[in-house]
Image (tube, rainbow, N blue to C red):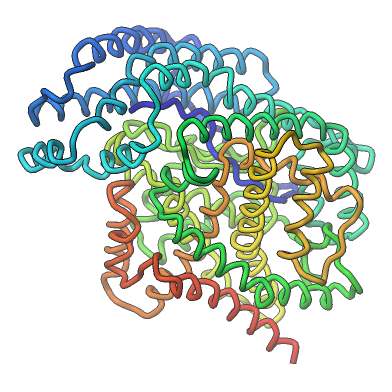
Length: 607
């Protein structure tokens, strides 16, 4: 059951600022005291012996186990997953603090190699489970309620039955993983962290350079965009090699597994039906004219431009001040928004600030973007930010803290059941953003301030829905094209540009060099087809928030129950108490209509 998951998914953003106050760093000692902590070696030794013992006790015998015996096997696997996950969480988080540090990279690689070797004997477990008859498993579940609790995981494991390879091939893929995708992921991460950009005579990293794209001064935004294009262009052959290799590796494995589409594996891991994703994608693409096209035409007028350039996409409005939000103010804003919804939510979030669970500052070599890493259920999550004080940074804090609250609440489910599919993993994060936005909107002191807040939220939602579905279409085209042969950088560039005009609309023209901007999106490397989960989560939360606004004293209780469920329920079961159904194509229109309604209000302000 255990699969080493080394790379949290990054959430890229364009941010910046200074005079922030004291920013928190991680205290990783709740995992281990340091890389030389003797407990790491003890845990490694235990893993080595326990994985071998597990295989000796159960391989070839699962069909003979009584319900109590199957439950014991599951619980032993959970403990193995927890111990291996603790080691790899520590190694990965420490690495992401300074990806250019050779010692940290070596430590993580060595841990990964060892754990991959130790857990190879466990590969039989899911393979053998999938050879059991449905009737046999149903009988075990009927006889033992504690075992039956794990049915959702068994169901997800067994969804892979049609695509399962021989035991020998599955073990080979497991062993080979350390020099396959994960090695290319690491090359990408180290390359991105090491990039240097020259802006106004200063050498900057990726995050600080992206931050210039939100400056009031248009010349600074243009300089940053052109410098990003120049540096990405210098490395474009390497980035093309990374993408060619990873997409080909995936195509080979998918072909051997007889998966019908490149997206099938992601849909299975997300526990979502292909037709639901297709309905989401089609609804968003059909809504481009009433969402992104309409909004960016408004923004073009506000900026006084004949055409917008890519460096204007996330530009502040002319009436927007460039005030930097200090860290303490960001903390208070988010915590108070959470507390207004439910005091319990703020109470869960508070330790992140007080106990070293957030790493907020921008530092040399630190991984770009933001993420919340759940680590293991016996510890707690950690949040990474690159906080530079822009209003969008406050929303990123609200977003990642939402993930953290979700992960804390789901932890009681245990290692097998706590983790949610990516589509549902965005629920609490986007909801946390919405709570924070609504609180800020209620406090707006003028029409202009309300306009700035609404426009900022619309842009965030367009980035979350429209842009991510455009990314998804780009990935679909990329993987389809790679099946026909090696892709040159120019060919990948052309695929990227084929979705940009369609999604952003006629208000834009595109500078020379923008065609290489696909190269820095980490999702394409770390988690193919992840990106539609953002649009799924935004649409789901918009529908949820509409239910919340309709009233009902028990909404908070239902909401917390949904988060506590972790991965123990399918999306249909989770949404049923709210009267929602994501398999209904009309469901997505509810979320899209919320965005459209905000654009309606912005247009009305023009009168």
